[in-house]
Length: 147
Image (cartoon, rainbow, N blue to C red; front, side):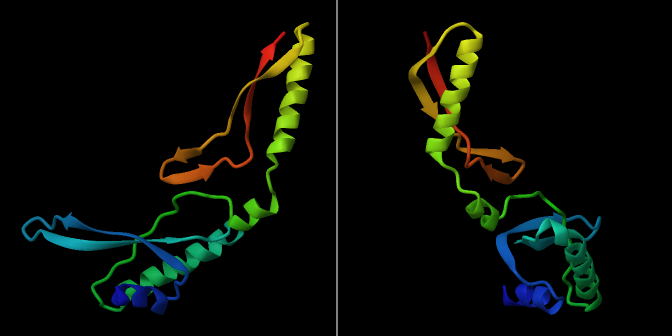
Protein backbone atom coordinates (compact mmCIF):
# COMPACT_ATOMS: atom_id res chain seq x y z
CA UNK A 1 0.00 0.00 0.00
CA UNK A 2 2.82 2.42 0.82
CA UNK A 3 4.30 1.81 -2.64
CA UNK A 4 1.03 2.75 -4.30
CA UNK A 5 0.25 5.84 -2.20
CA UNK A 6 3.91 6.86 -2.47
CA UNK A 7 3.70 6.66 -6.26
CA UNK A 8 0.64 8.89 -6.24
CA UNK A 9 2.17 11.39 -3.84
CA UNK A 10 5.46 11.36 -5.75
CA UNK A 11 3.54 12.16 -8.93
CA UNK A 12 1.85 15.14 -7.25
CA UNK A 13 -1.51 13.56 -6.41
CA UNK A 14 -2.73 13.96 -2.82
CA UNK A 15 -6.05 13.92 -1.01
CA UNK A 16 -7.18 10.56 -2.39
CA UNK A 17 -9.28 7.98 -0.55
CA UNK A 18 -8.78 4.26 -1.12
CA UNK A 19 -12.08 2.77 -2.30
CA UNK A 20 -11.08 -0.77 -3.24
CA UNK A 21 -8.52 -3.32 -4.29
CA UNK A 22 -9.18 -6.21 -6.71
CA UNK A 23 -7.43 -8.46 -9.18
CA UNK A 24 -8.01 -8.58 -12.90
CA UNK A 25 -6.76 -10.89 -15.63
CA UNK A 26 -4.70 -9.36 -18.39
CA UNK A 27 -4.76 -11.37 -21.61
CA UNK A 28 -1.46 -11.03 -23.41
CA UNK A 29 -2.36 -13.94 -25.71
CA UNK A 30 0.35 -16.49 -24.90
CA UNK A 31 1.35 -14.94 -21.58
CA UNK A 32 -1.77 -14.11 -19.50
CA UNK A 33 -1.14 -12.30 -16.23
CA UNK A 34 -3.05 -11.23 -13.16
CA UNK A 35 -2.81 -7.61 -12.05
CA UNK A 36 -3.71 -5.97 -8.76
CA UNK A 37 -5.93 -2.91 -9.24
CA UNK A 38 -6.09 -0.21 -6.57
CA UNK A 39 -9.06 2.18 -6.77
CA UNK A 40 -8.97 5.65 -5.27
CA UNK A 41 -11.39 8.56 -5.20
CA UNK A 42 -10.21 12.12 -5.62
CA UNK A 43 -12.77 14.86 -5.03
CA UNK A 44 -12.21 18.25 -6.62
CA UNK A 45 -14.36 21.37 -7.01
CA UNK A 46 -16.00 21.67 -10.43
CA UNK A 47 -14.21 24.97 -11.09
CA UNK A 48 -10.88 23.14 -10.67
CA UNK A 49 -11.80 20.11 -12.83
CA UNK A 50 -9.61 21.17 -15.76
CA UNK A 51 -6.52 21.82 -13.65
CA UNK A 52 -7.11 18.62 -11.65
CA UNK A 53 -7.34 16.57 -14.86
CA UNK A 54 -4.14 18.20 -16.12
CA UNK A 55 -2.43 17.26 -12.87
CA UNK A 56 -3.64 13.65 -13.16
CA UNK A 57 -2.48 13.45 -16.79
CA UNK A 58 0.94 14.68 -15.69
CA UNK A 59 0.99 12.09 -12.89
CA UNK A 60 0.00 9.40 -15.40
CA UNK A 61 2.99 10.25 -17.58
CA UNK A 62 5.29 10.45 -14.57
CA UNK A 63 4.23 7.05 -13.19
CA UNK A 64 4.49 5.29 -16.56
CA UNK A 65 7.88 6.89 -17.22
CA UNK A 66 9.59 5.78 -14.01
CA UNK A 67 9.70 2.06 -14.96
CA UNK A 68 8.08 0.96 -11.67
CA UNK A 69 5.71 -1.43 -13.43
CA UNK A 70 2.76 0.70 -12.31
CA UNK A 71 0.23 2.37 -14.56
CA UNK A 72 -2.32 5.05 -13.75
CA UNK A 73 -5.73 5.04 -15.40
CA UNK A 74 -8.58 7.33 -14.41
CA UNK A 75 -12.04 8.53 -15.28
CA UNK A 76 -14.47 11.20 -14.10
CA UNK A 77 -17.34 9.42 -12.39
CA UNK A 78 -19.86 11.95 -11.20
CA UNK A 79 -20.71 15.00 -9.20
CA UNK A 80 -21.91 15.57 -5.68
CA UNK A 81 -22.85 18.53 -3.54
CA UNK A 82 -20.05 19.53 -1.20
CA UNK A 83 -20.44 19.16 2.56
CA UNK A 84 -19.88 22.91 2.93
CA UNK A 85 -22.75 23.77 0.57
CA UNK A 86 -25.11 21.31 2.26
CA UNK A 87 -24.34 22.82 5.64
CA UNK A 88 -24.73 26.40 4.37
CA UNK A 89 -28.31 25.74 3.22
CA UNK A 90 -30.14 24.13 6.14
CA UNK A 91 -33.50 22.52 5.51
CA UNK A 92 -36.39 23.29 7.85
CA UNK A 93 -39.02 20.54 7.98
CA UNK A 94 -41.44 23.07 9.52
CA UNK A 95 -40.93 25.43 6.56
CA UNK A 96 -41.46 22.57 4.10
CA UNK A 97 -44.68 21.56 5.87
CA UNK A 98 -45.90 25.16 5.83
CA UNK A 99 -45.18 25.38 2.08
CA UNK A 100 -47.02 22.09 1.49
CA UNK A 101 -50.06 23.34 3.40
CA UNK A 102 -50.07 26.56 1.40
CA UNK A 103 -49.86 24.69 -1.91
CA UNK A 104 -52.54 22.22 -0.84
CA UNK A 105 -54.87 25.09 0.04
CA UNK A 106 -54.31 26.77 -3.36
CA UNK A 107 -54.82 23.53 -5.31
CA UNK A 108 -57.90 22.59 -3.31
CA UNK A 109 -59.41 26.07 -3.77
CA UNK A 110 -58.82 25.84 -7.52
CA UNK A 111 -60.71 22.51 -7.51
CA UNK A 112 -63.56 23.98 -5.47
CA UNK A 113 -62.81 21.96 -2.33
CA UNK A 114 -60.75 22.54 0.77
CA UNK A 115 -57.60 20.87 2.09
CA UNK A 116 -58.32 18.86 5.20
CA UNK A 117 -56.02 17.16 7.67
CA UNK A 118 -52.70 15.59 6.77
CA UNK A 119 -53.04 11.92 5.80
CA UNK A 120 -49.34 11.10 5.43
CA UNK A 121 -45.88 12.61 5.42
CA UNK A 122 -42.87 11.02 3.74
CA UNK A 123 -39.25 12.07 3.47
CA UNK A 124 -37.15 10.60 0.68
CA UNK A 125 -34.13 8.45 1.32
CA UNK A 126 -31.30 8.51 -1.17
CA UNK A 127 -31.43 8.43 -4.95
CA UNK A 128 -28.80 6.29 -6.66
CA UNK A 129 -27.43 7.37 -10.03
CA UNK A 130 -24.78 4.95 -11.26
CA UNK A 131 -22.48 4.59 -8.27
CA UNK A 132 -22.95 8.10 -6.93
CA UNK A 133 -25.44 8.68 -4.13
CA UNK A 134 -27.38 11.91 -4.01
CA UNK A 135 -29.06 12.58 -0.70
CA UNK A 136 -32.21 14.62 -1.13
CA UNK A 137 -32.03 16.49 2.13
CA UNK A 138 -34.62 19.18 1.56
CA UNK A 139 -37.76 17.46 0.34
CA UNK A 140 -41.03 16.40 1.89
CA UNK A 141 -44.10 14.65 0.46
CA UNK A 142 -47.34 15.48 2.24
CA UNK A 143 -50.75 13.98 1.42
CA UNK A 144 -53.86 15.90 2.50
CA UNK A 145 -57.49 14.84 2.72
CA UNK A 146 -59.75 16.81 0.37
CA UNK A 147 -63.03 18.00 1.83
